[in-house]
Length: 53
Image (cartoon, rainbow, N blue to C red):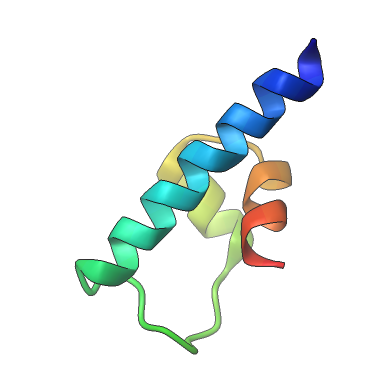
């Protein structure tokens, strides 16, 4: 059951990161501080790692 919840969170993080790129808040090719991004999104680093790797 936890896997489904985690997959949902990863999808939410993916969509938010995609929107941040489209809005110009993140620049394609720019290095991302994963800890800072996780803090901005209010999530742990695990879903951020899955999205950016």
